[in-house]
Length: 212
Image (cartoon, rainbow, N blue to C red; front, side, top):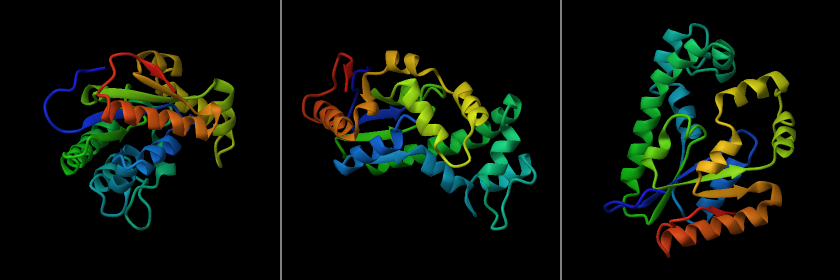
């Protein structure tokens, strides 16, 4: 937990591995009136027709653009899957643009008491350095696996490849200021989210780890 420095909102980083329920948890913060910046949504916009990243990605990875000029994410995933050098190229193209989008978001909400940066690879990309606190969304491995494999088009190989890119859940939990366990059901998660919002907006930033 970093001490809050200067004016502006408390910045809470929200992260979690695939299948943990992070998107649903982000929506819980939004329903409480907390501005949420969705890094995945920013990437979708960058990849879309006319998006700031579409042309550069198409040049670096021929054949991944769709008929409308956007990036076909299925083709792009196939182009970088199992190829760390290609993934590094993609990250060099996209990460600065995603960071710029989050910077603009923070400027738009400079008067809010609390904002959330929803970043799937927060720890993996060093994004925690921009946050005053981090909340990790988590669930037991069997729950995570069942959720992910129930998704259309997902199989064991794809799941394993995604996990290989992500920091182990146990390490994320150990580094987090807050842990939100979605395996207890969404009402419990909603209560945990409400508690985090209360702590960060009413009682100030916590100096201890809290599990929700």
